[in-house]
Image (cartoon, rainbow over the protein chains, first blue to last red):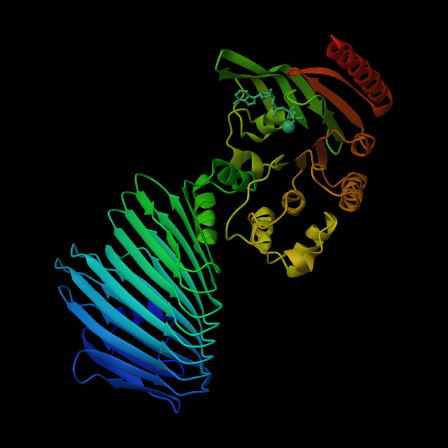
Length: 307
Length: 244
Ligand SMILES: Nc1ncnc2c1ncn2[C@@H]1O[C@H](COP(=O)(O)OP(=O)(O)OP(=O)(O)O)[C@@H](O)[C@H]1O
Ligand SMILES: [Mg+2]
């Protein structure tokens, strides 16, 4: 079914050895490679376009859904629509991820559009990992779009990680906290190197009374890479939002962070912080006084920062 | 043994060269407890940093157990058994106290071991072991974690730069106990830069550094009365000057 390269990529993006437990849908080079439903989680292929619908029954308790995508065919351009319908009071962990292995000289590209309808008081942890490898000169391009609608009391933690290997990425995330007391936490970890470029744009609308948003973006730009962040939060009622962008800049890389907060209500409380800087010399020195070489010290600092 | 011979450190200031250390010579015997004290800006930290290799001296020599280490890197010196607790320790986003102690120990350490180092600096281990060493910690907490890294490192020579700074009375009492214990058990040579009488009184020897030079050295009984007399007279001088 899956060859070794595909299996390796699956491990990298989905922490999957074999097919594990829970609901699962593996997409490989544009084809459905494996699917398993559970009593509470039903995955169906769309009939009008490429992609799947994932329906999670109300009150589903602590189940997992894995939906990894693997691209190994050089020159493949993928576009998929995945829609999640999460029932009221469900508590689930969803692991999505895309790995590209490009050995050829044509660009390989995956565009994933994920839309979440999160029911009342549902709790979702959504993890998305991106990974690229392969010796080919063709670029590895990933453009994920994630859109979330949160009902009353819904709480979502969105974790995205892209460490090395992806040449070009344009990420767009939109969150609408429409229900009262809904809460979104976004954690973004990114490391770019060589000539890579990553753009991350985000719109968060706090429309529900007492809704909350927290965005923590940590990134490292090495070599000649470029990163641009546009996190935007809009508060339209009594709400709380906090955006924190932290970047370490190395080599001759460039990082831009343009956080924007808009309060349209007197009780909206929004904060943003952005900091870009090199690794402090004192940090490296401290770890050297503990016996590390400068290279080991640097790696240790980055490892913690991106955790 | 640590041998410092004619150590000089000169930097380029805005108005020309500045001599931060001038021909300092000092030997520290194994397992001794030595306290360096002296006025602010006297050159104490610069000397400690030169011993650790963080600052490259512009003149003189440093020998450690007979080996000339003057041109060795910080890493090499650390691996040869020298450690230094920073006066102002850096913070690390995302690094846990446990991780930092593990790096310091140079090997995997048990939960109990990690906790014992924190207890020795007066921190309740359970509350701190999994915290990040970042700006969420108070100044005194970071300082005590810094000292714990030196304890975890178990070097032959432990240098502490104003370990008392920012530390509450209770933790300070615990800390002095710890220094005393290391000394009594002859676990390491201790070199502490301090302005605190309680620490100064523990020392086998006191070294006074002022204006970049070693201005005096001797036992507590010899040196402490001179320091007191000196500080009283400079207070009087200050008053006289202010009246002018
Ligand atoms: N890079 C530098 N350029 C110019 N002056 C420096 C530099 N580094 C240190 N100094 C000066 O050298 C002197 C000694 O500094 P040092 O930090 O060693 O003092 P200290 O004795 O540790 O003081 P304290 O008790 O306040 O900690 C100070 O006057 C300081 O301003
Ligand atoms: Mg000092």
